[in-house]
Length: 453
Image: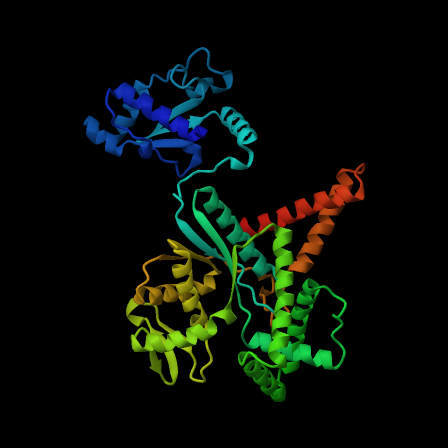
């Protein structure tokens, strides 16, 4: 049992002992909103009714009953604070603020106890079974293949992994998964440009590893965006490229499979560097066809309806607006893949809760998705953990224009700085030790910076 729990139980035991009745429970104790008031607090509203007094009188009565006169044996630095002597072994001071009896713990005692506990339990410190093994799937790292991996993706993966570890430590049965956007116009644009480079022998990637090729794909995408601007012929060629990929056959489809592997090799390299592991990776391309079939069924069940040639979910009566699933030109939007994916999660994995770690721009969409699943009869909890987007001083980042800070650029700067600082502080260390230490410091700092705000 951890120290704070022991202290809470001790407080309750001594109060009830002085009252002569079991009137106070551990659940009655709270943490003050202002920590200057104390570490633990007992609101005396409920107790006042039992004692036939007003809450302020009840708090003062408890303080007197606990006999918190400062004993001669109290540490000098706590003498003015009425340090609890016989009752709490000089480890706590008491104060009354209005209807609250506040308890302030000796920080030196608390710190020493925590340090000793951590030394004994090591990585098991803080673990508990509050989650009661409820099955929770948490989805994060929703990156696009064939694009640059930037610091916006980094915040997502660091935040998601932190929540994953917190829930795991609290006894939940966690299934961390990633959902990769590997289909769409951005892919066709990259592959169109990639094929041009190959034809013109400009690729410069033949001798690179797959992960290195994955980095190059992001650069090819940015270059493609510039080439396509005001180029109607190029746009038509890209549309044809996408059509051939969707057919899942031919040279274009084979190029898509090969280059997707490059992107995934790069993503996996990033996961390894950050110490992040997933139990399953889902791909948008795996659910598109099932989603198109599902659209017809949902039209029959009137969960979806047609509007001006498009297929929509009319959620106005739930104050969730209109969600377009299929455009009038039959282009499939996010819900077409997301709905069958959610169904597979619930069915195959028997989840209690499905968590989506996505930035706040997707808040409405995830409420809409959750409502559609509810209308389909699914009762499992769908939770959105949102976070604010990473912005540059110049405004929003854009992979399309290349206005981003890439993961590689950030990593390079941080590791260089960490190596310089480590070498200065430890001139007697060899280069290998400096590099290893700098990596631990650098990646740790990177992850902390992403989740601290």
